[in-house]
Length: 396
Image 1 (cartoon, rainbow, N blue to C red):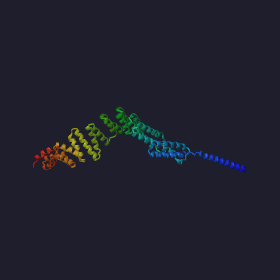
Image 2 (image 1 turned 180 degrees about the vertical axis):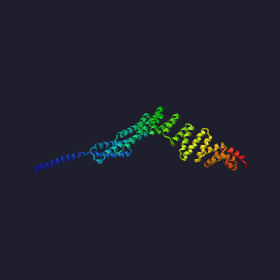
Image 3 (image 1 turned 45 degrees about the vertical axis):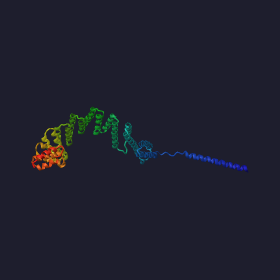
Image 4 (image 1 turned 30 degrees about the vertical axis):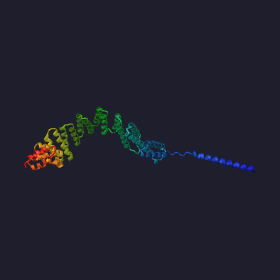
């Protein structure tokens, strides 16, 4: 009987042991199960992480996550449903990568790490140049490319890589051949940094000859004028004038000829400008400049004629004082008083105007008014002694 119970117990133990082994095998099988991989879900997760990295200014991480998202989107592109917009999301990731490189380029440039900056710009540029636009328009992409070239040109210039900077500007000019600002920047690098005026002016000459526009010749003329090559500047200005003749051109020519001390030529174009009937402020300035030019030419009568025209429009005290001094020499006491009064209406303490008017009143035998003016300046450092002398001799 004892042996039978032992056999039953032994059999039960074997069954329990087998059950435990079976249980362990099931548990092991559950651990080894691999979840189904979902590339689209992983792409969206990486996409969102990349966006957050950009928000946090973590641009290196943003590039990594954007590249990861792009590859995952590419993996499901052929099988994804239209509503998943996978192609558009891939474009977004490419633009995120480019934008992150640009931000890194800004940071590197501020730290004067110019090679790093140019490297990041170049990587962004390659993305833009190879990209076929989907939602982003071709015009937007082209603007981005032009902006990159401009930034790269500036960084290269700051790094002292002047020829490289010129290459980037040339890339812009291939797209926008009439970009005056870029031409001027290129000219400045050649002239100011490389110190090669021959190449610099050849750039402007070539552009002007090809474009044959007033703008092109004005750019060349202004550049020659800045270098004080007035002969070449005048030639270019005349070419511009032959292509466009208007008030703006007359003003430019008037200013140029004044700057080069060619007073008669300046007046020729300033009088043409006056004939276009500009606004009163401009007209008064033009008359004043013509008068000043005649003064330089030694023609005092014409000087006064045009300064009178200027003061009739704009009661400028400086111009009025010049006229008062001129008419004092001409012994035209009425005009001395008139123009001195204009000055004193703006500046009651102007000692020169007081002196001129006081003397004019004496000449007109208006002794009371003369005394009033001269007493105001009898302690003046410049005119005090003269005023006191006149006052002593005034009739009581």
